Length: 488
Image 1: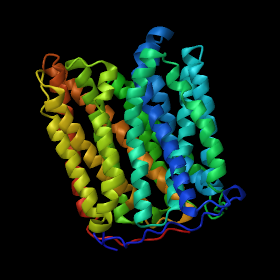
Image 2 (image 1 turned 90 degrees about the horizontal axis):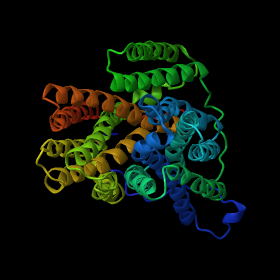
Image 3 (image 1 turned 180 degrees about the horizontal axis):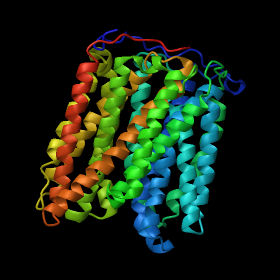
């Protein structure tokens, strides 16, 4: 199937959602809508938690007397376990059941959030953040897999994925705003204690609304592959974090990055020899799926850097308060939500995956061009607002479209894996992007007499180049596409 072939005008959703006794008299469309709302809420909570903590870090450091070295683990601990366990979490969902694994992950996530909010010491807080990241890694792939379970390929799934990606962006932005409000008016513990009540309601509602499905007995767990993949990604994220904090000449950073490479090579060797690999070759045989994953890895780097450096510019140069800086992203949040939920689902069936994804990546790059105009005498209205809204418009086109490309043609026994691959690409891209661009920005700042703006501009310039690379990869890899079904 050519990537530019319009999708058929079929608004039918999957009819394989059995009714539970409590659903008698409830229409299938309403139940599907409720199921989608619950899955989207779970994703929103994960993204909210990932960003809400950043605003509270200075307060946590002051009130708990946490050293700078330990403080980074409140963020890195979550990212380390989350990013490294995503593939394994997705594969467990394929084997045990997506709903069951999501519920278990949410319960652990809620308990870990409660422990974090009540933590008496910094060590307890850091350990709870590791647990939060690990449990979230078993929730995120299931969220995407459940959408592909519930909605058939076509306009219905495209719309659902648009809403899903809109919630992802909204959660990240809302976390910045809510983190500022909680920290300023309630206290830093509230950023964690906001989760448990929501999780309780989610678990009860998911058990009632989303049906349990038969386990896919054909999906076997490759424990050797899972161990190597998890260890490799964990070493990569740790090495990048250490490099960003201490410089990439640091022995710990170099050792971790070298270990990541060795474990990654070992993973590839094991996968090629395994009778039941963790990542079956047919899943990556589709050029469009490969291109979409690489695009998400690259665009993930642009996304995290754009938020990070724009926030720093507003606070360090324009002297915005943390709360005001968070509120400054509200127009961008509205733009990405509107684009993902309303525009992408309309243009994708007409123009196809390739054209819409390319447009999103190009527009995202143009947003970085706008942000590259920042200066010491700049302003939010002139230098920031237009850039973040253009970037968000590109995100709203690119992320739902890429998720369609990654999940298209994937059989039921591989849907958790597809979700894990998609989120892993984003997370690894963000880890690489933040470490690399922050290092480049710091080097340029030091080389120009401590000019923060020079460093930020350098990061946006590199981000433009990353967008160009993503555009070229998608343009070449998605020239033609033969859809291949993976094992059902």
